[in-house]
Length: 166
Ligand SMILES: CC(C)(COP(=O)(O)OP(=O)(O)OC[C@H]1O[C@@H](n2cnc3c(N)ncnc32)[C@H](O)[C@@H]1OP(=O)(O)O)[C@@H](O)C(=O)NCCC(=O)NCCS
Image (tube, rainbow, N blue to C red; front, side, top):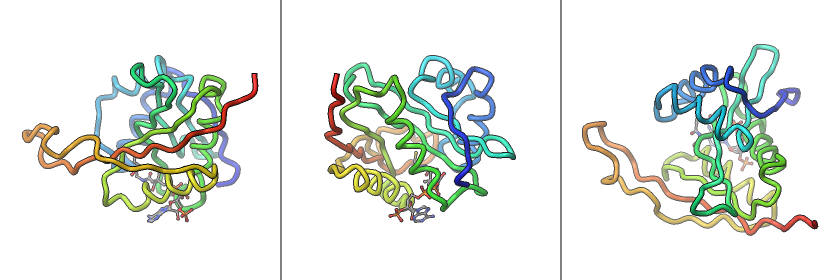
């Protein structure tokens, strides 16, 4: 998997990013949401491809209320690419994107039982030599009961990331 190529997505990647992230077991959102990811949020997001096609994706944006941060909404890797460091490399690559060069904090939410995801973000903090702080963000009761039960989502905040020299 060391040879997966990474790039920012385009509108024509929206359908594949939707398939990949839905099949990774994340919440199934509308295809339209991924057209937004691949257009309005493309500069801060990423798609990884190997010789079989898309193998990983990161949907991320700069929250208007917290512009110093990049929020990783979703990160997913197809089964064939898992356990080889691809997600970790994608997060490093997200931080290296030109549109994220002034980012001081990477945030994400995880359900407390998602061991792989917790290890991914804690490992990123370790790589960067910064803290990974955790606190409640969305409670189970914030989610609509009609949609079934949803676990709470805890926020992880990784930083402070070093300032780039001008
Ligand atoms: C979470 C996910 C993106 C990790 O992708 P990946 O490319 O396999 O992860 P990496 O190989 O970069 O590993 C990152 C860390 O996670 C750990 N990890 C990976 N898969 C794991 C698993 N199934 N169980 C426990 N830990 C796991 C690795 O050991 C590594 O931690 P370490 O450095 O402390 O050893 C992938 O499992 C996935 O797509 N899961 C479903 C979607 C999801 O839950 N996304 C996160 C919430 S948005």
